[in-house]
Length: 441
Image (cartoon, rainbow, N blue to C red; front, side, top):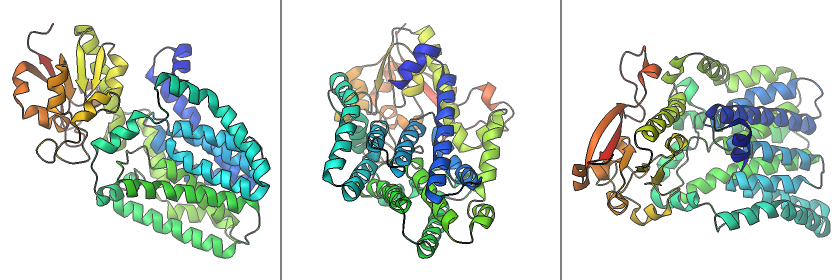
């Protein structure tokens, strides 16, 4: 709905989405700084410093994928700030964040329980009623348009991806390790140990009076519950998920660090010691705005691949505007292609889920690979099939291949990969395959 309103004003442009994400990321940092000011009573610049050093890197690692992470965090933290200030509308705002990311239901529940404890059932009931009133239009829209409150993507991901505990653990740190080149699990372990040290230090030194500690505990507990649920349910943790719990945790850690006696004068040194990747990350982000060499970073290759999908989608729209297309990743393609698109993984096209999960290794290389079932291709009989070889293992081993002609394209266009000594790859894939049904067009 937000994107529809944006495109109504600006037209359908990726840059408009990027600009919106930039604004939302800035809102997250500004609200975080205000929350820190309220929680610590600091009138100086330290709240802004901590928000920039701790919160900004986390939120940028989610918002640079042009996903809904920055929006969800902006709404959640605004609600948290209102709650800290005692606003009766705080629960309603936190409730809105659940529509952006369902995981944030844990924060809504925790803030609601705190309202009951602190205000009693009657006043908490009034705030709950206000939250229901604000949410009602969105609930009615979802039921009318989709017929359900639970997005199909949640069900689809639980069916398609078959993850081991170690795989989920390796994904939980997200991209925080990337700028200093540490393996994900090592980087995440160091980050977690640093976080645990600050928490223990802060709780031991802080007198426990004040609403800020309860509200901070809500953010911290919620931030821990989300990855625990991911582990318990063996969820595929996409790279834009970790900021959902890393940002609230970073905010609480910043507040604890600022409130520990005698630390405020050394906060810059402490943060620099615990998070040496921050200046490196910010420099990479700045470099990305002016040079294609940012593609050397996997983080930016993932974003560039979306641009390549858009370019390919527009090309296919020109040469085969009425074709029926199937792909494993349809976001960028759908942005450029106006014809009928089938999502072979089933996140958007539920009919594909009847053929998932695929077997490993016969039909896909791993349980964390969202590949297209050959049986679904046989049922739909699409005119064009697009995907990396990684996503087409089952199809490439079937008799269906003989029905299509193949065009193999570089994953990144010459304009983006110019100057690199060898072809760029992502997830080990150097080509994207475009299969066109023989006789089509």
